[in-house]
Image (cartoon, rainbow, N blue to C red):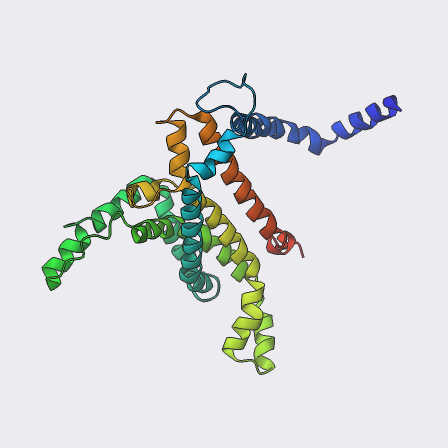
Length: 291
């Protein structure tokens, strides 16, 4: 039986696809799975230790509640939900136009949307700082033109939301464009021939069929926003401390690797749970056009 199992394994190993996947699999194990295992292991180590040769403990997990880290988690989830809602409302009309109306101009619009991604995120956010700063571009322009002041929007929660929406807009837009472009025009024409109004066509045909793209965009931007750091630090100052800021502080200034590890593990676990629950409702074959 052992010899048969060995022969079966060797036959499986000789398959071209398996051999081609070995380098990538080794790279992922070393570069992705390995660090994750280390982070999980450190989350069970005593506070402020730099070695894994200690007795495991759960004190880091309980400290998440006793040290009020749940506030950072709450703010991160709240801002992520607000950002996703605003991005969906902003990008759906744009995506509809790119997929159905712009025609030969669609590539130009796509280029204009993707162009900011070529510039460093921090540079773009500091541009917003200059715009929102007291006596900055916005405040100075309003004082000059209308004699009113708009000082004070910087280092507030709305400023953080503005930065999140600005940075992650392309990550919501492009999945929506893909989802909307896959809706056959014949379905809308058939619904119109059957007497459906424009609103009914949108509600009964376009919106349900574009739902895979909507869910992909929402999941992508939600996960990215949960782990965002620069927006809250540059545009928010100390108005809100997001969980990524606490993780960075634990690993750097506090030199408390177990505390940073446990916060990272909880963030990954919560994000993974959300993705798992939502992906159960998404037909990936439908999105990539296999059916």
